[in-house]
Structure formats: structure tokens, C-alpha cells
Image 1 (spheres, rainbow, N blue to C red):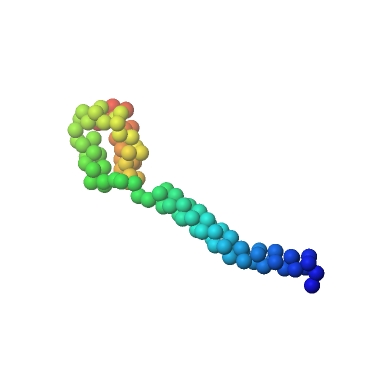
Image 2: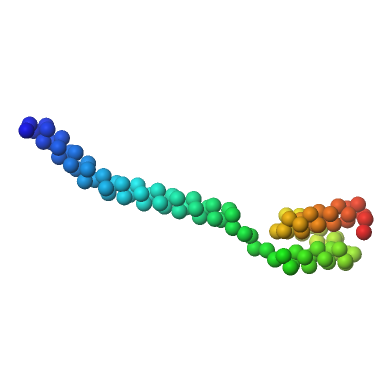
Length: 102
């Protein structure tokens, strides 16, 4: 066996020995990356804090107390409500209040 063939064999052996270590590092990096992506997705789709009963109470007050719209119209918006039905009710109350219709 020539010297260059032997050195090629050693290089190949070293490369094969290093491969599992590099493979493990790559796998760890991939797993960490997937974990970070999963965390981002979970944050995006988690349910925001809300209280359906409080939303109902606010809407009830807006419909029954005459001065309530003036007190909350600058603070509460349609997007303040979690339930879509409550957003629609708030939007209707907003429209009626703007048009001065009780």
C-alpha cells in the first residue's frame, strides 16, 4: 500500500469517526429550531385572556345606562371583545350611539 493510499484511508476513517458527532450536533440544532418554531406557533394560537361574563356586563351597561357610551367610547373598541357576537353587538351600539338613536 502506498503512502498516499494509507493517508487517504486515515482521512476517510477520521471523517467517518467525526460524522456521528457532527450528525448529533446537527440533530440537536434541528430539534432546537423546531422547538422554537413550535413555541412561536403556540404563542400565536393560544387563547388571549378574556371573560365572557365581563363582556356581557359591559354590553348590558351600554344598552341600559344612558351615559355609559360617553364614558367608555374612547377606551373600549370593537376589538376589545373576544367573542365575535359581542363585537357585533358593540358595533351596533356604536353605530346607534353615533347616529343619536337610543
